[in-house]
Length: 485
Image (cartoon, rainbow, N blue to C red; front, side, top):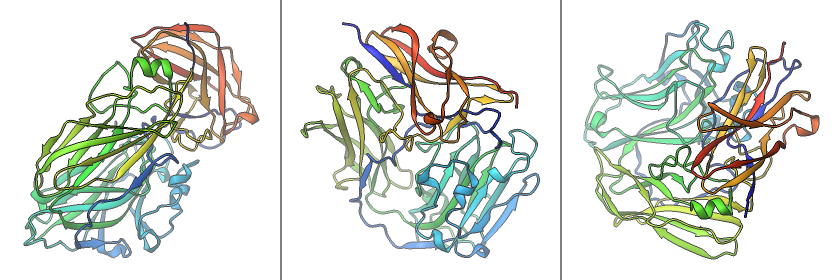
């Protein structure tokens, strides 16, 4: 029996622009996974953290010193305007418009690359700046210490991170968060706040002149922003575990079966799910001093009828501070759905000494024919994030997403989400490519964006059904055209 498969183009939102568009145009890297959608919950059961050894809530900008080699000079700014992020980025997702750090209302630091002169990439105006605590921190007597801070950002080819010195700045150790090509958080758009913790025992433990420096370099791209607040140094707890990078399938491009590179299915056709069952993985990290024995990943899968199936990984041991270990854990069995509907995947980790990490719950919908990796659970575009302008004065763009096919089927249509900032009248096509986009296969008739399409999903049929073969990766694409003004 043939399966008719309308692919949902995933992960992207699309800003389709025409001559009426007056704002400067900006490109965005695609976004991988959001853990802030309505289907995600996090239930804390972690042990209480020890009292801080040092902290700075960024309420007084004079406790920090500022350096920059920006051209022209553009530095970190102190502000207590919690809504400033929405002024840095046009059409910023609602989840990021207000900075939600614990003490944001009494002030925080922000660097706004979006305010750079020229508003273009590679125009000779790089932003390179740092802020560093003025008074060195004395950690004498504390051998196992960690640095924690709250922040929020949107990435676009910019480098950001924190560096620590145990000798008053003579030497530094960097902890990179993003660089010109990638980022180590799940998304282009961070959580709000995103809480980062780094074990700095080998650098700052028992040291009397510790410095913390936040550094930023937009690499001469017209980047976005980075907000930082609530910086804390505390002792590493005796026992600790963290479960991150949870994924339940959708191995992106090329049929890799292991390695924590999954992109989760929002919508997964039953035939594809049967041929390639859900595979559950996560990264488990020892965040304490003691070795954690029998570290195990647990996953509960709740089916549409309410029944729950439980899965676990093989156990392992993880060494603790000062050089803590982490490992990618996969459940020993995969999950094959038996009915269409919503499936909830709950992830957590345990060890002999740590009862449970927080629980992360994500969802996937098993469908008859629709295939999607867009995270748009409410069907309103709110879970999507970054996109591309497709019709620009410098040329059109083709924006695509990859789908692995595990059972022979047919493509009948491609769907995409249109940003509310788009302008009616723009012309687009949907297209199909094989593998990495170098092999063109098929396309639709021209489609004209209407006023009713703004802020909505649009489905465009192919000229005729196109056969998709198992064992092949395909790119579902939307093509914009150059506009003269």
